[in-house]
Amino acid sequence: MAEDRKTTSSSVEWRVTMPDNHSSGRAEQGVEWQVKVPEGSTVKVEHETSLVVRAWAQMVQFLVGRKDMFIGFLKNAWKLGVDDPRKVMHGLKVGLALALVSLFYYTRPLYDGVGGAAMWAIMTVVVVFEYTVGGCLYKGFNRATATSTAGAIALGVHWVAHKSGKQFEPVILSGSVFLLASAATFSRFVPTIKTKFDYGITIFILTYSLVAVSGYRVDALLQMAQQRVSTISIGIFICLCVCIMIRPVWAGQELHLLITRNMDKLAASLEGCIEEYLEEDSGTEKEKKSQKSQGYKAVLNSKASEESQANLARWEPRHGRFGFRHPWSEYLKVGVAMRYTAYCLEALNGCINSDIQAANSVKKCLSDECKKLGTQCAMVLKELSNSIKEMAQSSRLELLVCDMNLAVQDLQDALRSLPSQLQKEALQAAQVQKTSISSATITSVKNENIVTMPLMEVLPVITMASLLIEISVRIEGIVDAVESLADLSEFKPVSDEKPAKVVPSDDDASVAAQGSETKKTIPEV
Image 1: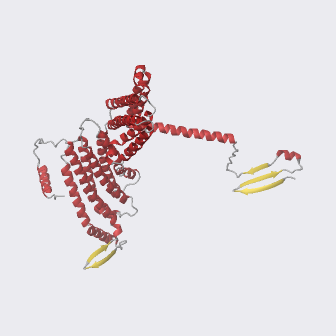
Image 2 (image 1 turned 90 degrees about the horizontal axis):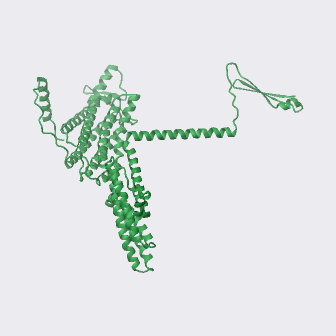
Image 3 (image 1 turned 180 degrees about the vertical axis):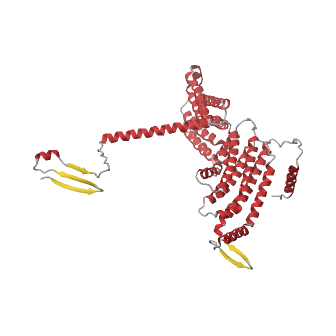
């Protein structure tokens, strides 16, 4: 007889009918499954896929993923080229330089002139061609000087070794390679040499070792050295011609623009931090302000780029508004002063994201003064940025610095009056609500109500105000660095031409009188 087994799970009844071994007709049919599903529900039957089908599905999924990655790569490359077409032009210039050098292989008269040493010209183009003119000049000069020096020394050592006899010749050559390579490698640790001639030292070691070792078995050593020097000189000449004559990118100009961009980001970051801390926003506006306040990170991370571009700018000839002996080191001092200010902005951003926050009522006590000081500091930074961009001295800078110092004094006065202001507001709130103040104790001393507030409720605002004052002091350091840069770079002086005389009205006369009184009361900072 057939055996029935019944199982009920989650309102679904499963029935399995097992055939009897003595029943041949039922045995051929095998196991019979019956499923009863409640009304209104659906059942999806999934068939087991074979191994081949699963492998094919995984392969298709892998190819689709690679396709998406490739499309994403193309989009990023296109965006990079659209944002800065000079990078696309740099790739075309490298291709053009290599195409010109390859003519020494494909043109028979040129090939006969340099022989198989034409490969050194191609290698020179590959290793010397750089994005900026300063980088190309730096590597070209180092490679030419190092190759010539190493070749001359190798010829001299080879001549001495040859005159010493066959027994001492390998010893002299090997010993010279050891001594010169060791001394040259050690010299790379000297800061001055590492900054200006690090690449040249590497080429010196490579060239001397190759010429000394190959010269031991090559008879025509002088001819080989002459061919290599000539082909390397050809490669350097082609690199410099293509790099300078076709859409040149100057390292000095890049450094100039980098400093101004970082200064603008520093000003925007300061404004963003103040707005994010004192204003109550939510959603998209808060995210925009949060992104705006992160601009100081670009200033902190630009040290290596500034030093590299300043080093390369020293090799460049006169171009545009920049002379041959332009004070590029002053730009580094401006960058140091900006990073010194950015560290304070990082601490201010930490106050914004801190878990301990002051109440909004406490923030409002210093809100106007903090906003005013932040605005004045940002205005000073923007004015400094414009002065560097135009390479002209600013006529408004001194007035803006005075306004910033006045805002600092206002904030300091507000900090001194903060306890009495908080006490007054708390007493008013207690009288309106007629309830005890949360986290406060009201006592009566000499018929006066005194409110004692926990220190942790006021400390975040005081910290933020103190950081703002410190930022204003450090901005004055940026002002001094920019003024030093302006003096050494000979920025355009402030125009001495007097504006056209305008007859003031009564309101304008009163405003001017107030302004003159204000200037008289400005203390020295």
